[in-house]
Image 1: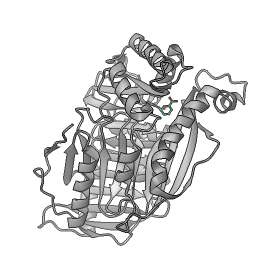
Image 2 (image 1 turned 30 degrees about the vertical axis):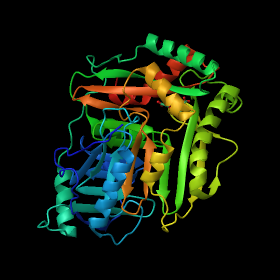
Image 3 (image 1 turned 90 degrees about the vertical axis):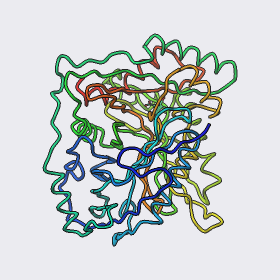
Length: 445
Ligand SMILES: C=C(O[C@H]1C=CC=C(C(=O)O)[C@@H]1O)C(=O)O
């Protein structure tokens, strides 16, 4: 598979690297809502959890790639940008200084262009401080705290319009994979598993939200961030959602991941059974097997890159408003490479993607079979989404519980379920609906 570089509007021709200058300025503490106050514009780049994270406005540089080399090409571009840039960053914390937001296609065969975008303004907040970073590509542009504040103030003047939720004409229609087709693909998946070709497959489907008036992305993101506070709310170029799953987070030589697999719908749970989630997830053989395969796929890849790793023996039950999940937080100290460096977040995202939580086991064979059974291009669904700084710190979640804005009035939603030998097609279909619920609620359909 060949890889291509392309120069999208507002970017430089392939092969050239813009010389960026950036300045980071510490700002006063934000209100209790934190970054939520800054999710005001539909076109913003967003990465936020518990009111912390980064919001990007505008674009000063952009890179796109496709194919099997999409991660490597993006990394080379980012390394070149980082090396050439003049970065004034007195804070020197993960996410301060120059950063890029990124979204990557699930598959090497996808027509979706994986992308890194460097915003003009970034507003950031972590557990200790708040900041803005202002970046310019024009060598003549003024780079100062005053110029940055003026630019931000201008951006915050305009709020994107809201969408009237629950308007009668908004509707959800079948996507490329109907309910019937999904049940059939799960059934076929089970028989492939029974034949011994794979032990787990994650099969996905889509549905399309058709709106009577343009989607209000910022409003959807605010709803997701408020209600799904324990998830990472993301928005990169029309890829929007709130994911509970962290593919990899890097801070210096410390890496962590939140692995999820094993799901229980809360909407159908009995209200008088406090042990229900514990019993149906932690004590259920099928769910534990599904989860263990996801843990194994991550730890097998992480092990050789780590000098120490902590992968808990027992998962915990993660409670979200729509579902419970079996979850495990894996932590590792990264081993130093021959050149004295440690792998950055993009190196690790490439190595870990796709985990068994979104593809299957063994990875290559599962990927081949799911492409055949689904017959759809997943685009960026279930691919890495997040951000990177110039020191290799960053966070890439798995783009789940979201969708792609395909036109001002249509959003394609995606959801997938881990299929093992004991899976039941009707139950997996119901689970896929539960996973689409956050987006449906936020869109009001
Ligand atoms: C593939 C998805 O979820 C994954 C993450 C958590 C639990 C999963 C499961 O129980 O099947 C999936 O592996 C999705 O939300 O589209």
